[in-house]
Amino acid sequence: MTEKLLSDVRHNFELINENIAKAAERSGRKREDITFLAATKTVDVSVINYAISLGLDHIGENKVQELLSKYDSYDLENCSLQFIGHLQTNKVRQLVGKVDLIQSVDSLKLANEIARQSTARNITTDILVEVNVGNEDAKSGVAPEQVEELLFQLCKIEGISVKGLMSIPPICENTQKICKYFDKMRNLFLDIKSKNIDNISMDILSMGMSSDYQEAILQGATMVRIGSLLFGERIYK
Ligand SMILES: *Cc1c(COP(=O)(O)O)cnc(C)c1O
Image 1: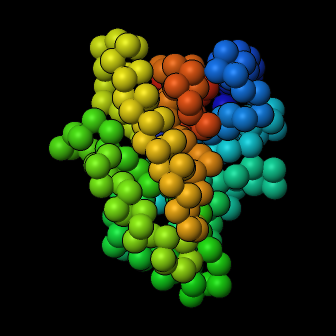
Image 2: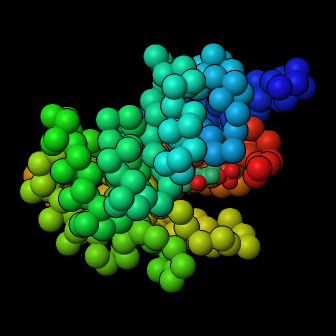
């Protein structure tokens, strides 16, 4: 771990926080209304913990194996650990009880397994429903048209608590296009919120990454997930 890397992370952290504050203000909200979650895949725990020492208070991993291998080393006293990647049912048991939020729930089957593992531990696990907002074949997530129907099933299940929606929109060549997807997510989020479904809260709208987090906030995101802009380009070992 080099001095240069740490000073870059510190600089990036400050810059991102300033930009989040500006975007929040432009969208009629406060800095504290927006959660900055750092996507920490491939990042060394020492660097993650350095960012936490600067005030970073939400991190997300996207692979169960990687999360488990780093788990004992994270400084989590003042930081929430979340899961943001595609989750297979057979890995749920290893994850439940370790993370504060599973952002990537995209089927009844997966939700049922999270609930089963949670009730076995006498806990409730907070989840988001992942929406495949661009209806892309290769992407996980529930089709926008099917979100409400899934929520009416999830609201009856003990051991899980739905807190909102998450999405990874298609890669777009310009911000105008991506904003269309963010807008679609916001409308879905507000539409569901207005229905006040029992046991379902719509507090978190998780969307926006390094290249588009400011646009996402302007379109109503309450949480952005940022990796490379904070930590630099990912190096896959
Ligand atoms: C890696 C990752 C991000 C962050 O991506 P960047 O473009 O590096 O900011 C956000 N969300 C998920 C689910 C990720 O896996």
